[in-house]
Length: 79
Image (cartoon, rainbow, N blue to C red; front, side):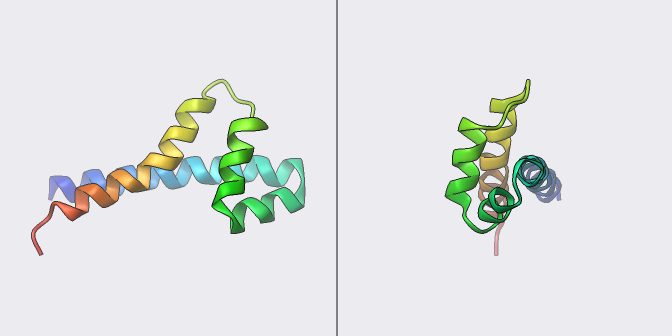
């Protein structure tokens, strides 16, 4: 049960960071927001090159790794 809760928290943190960057993309330009929503590579490009925040690298790493950590934790559960 603890692993499931940890995986849910990790997935929500990752989703929150992705949405945070997407909101910034939509505020910058509408087409950048739609492109970032539809293409993950552009989300990563924008986050690295144009996203400006004090916690930039933490947000990017949690956005990229949160769902991967959740998937890895859930994979350890017996089927």
